[in-house]
Image (cartoon, rainbow, N blue to C red):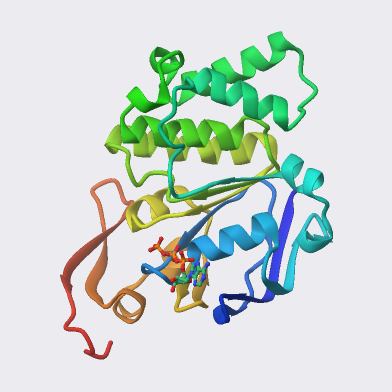
Length: 263
Ligand SMILES: Nc1ncnc2c1ncn2[C@@H]1O[C@H](COP(=O)(O)OP(=O)(O)OP(=O)(O)O)[C@@H](O)[C@H]1O
């Protein structure tokens, strides 16, 4: 059963302390967790630390086992990280890339089973028409969706997505996050997604973690975490949470505050 805990996590890179004692609420199977925060607040560093345990001091444990005690193969079988940068354009097709990645991670599937899994994933993310085109002929958004397929093809218990919607249009933002949330629910996995769009985070996440300068500024149920004071403090903006006609919370950002202005 997927369970993730992060307690007093410190990460140093090139002699700088990037994450400064991060502790998070326990994350449980089926949850979609949103990781938000300004540029350079440490979101990617946290995702990489969960995936690789590198540079860490303090605890990340997955299913009760410290990530630093997991062998490379065990990590690869259980954790997938979709990096911020989509797969580089190459002459491989999405189909070939997925198949070679799945083979390399030794999923133990027959060709037919793997073909079915890849077909389902490519279909959900709207990539079937592009499955046999060269990656270097695909748009940036399509390549981002290929990156998401790549992260999901081995059906990890811990699915880590670094800004999975940054290059996507409205339809595919909604689709990609629905696919990720349904995946977490149906496979009893945990999905952690770094997001800049707070409205998407409010809509799709069960739990939000807000980072500021390598520390946790707030965490908890999205609607309880996001308010004007937090947005002013963490992002330096005047913003408010309103309700749409259907009752869902919607963030409206009115203005960027003057640099140096207090919250
Ligand atoms: N290898 C590295 N060596 C030194 N500093 C690094 C390294 N990688 C990242 N950093 C620093 O760590 C801090 C956090 O970076 P990180 O990429 O985790 O932020 P982020 O929240 O994901 O940002 P963004 O929203 O802009 O993608 C930044 O100040 C960055 O310069």
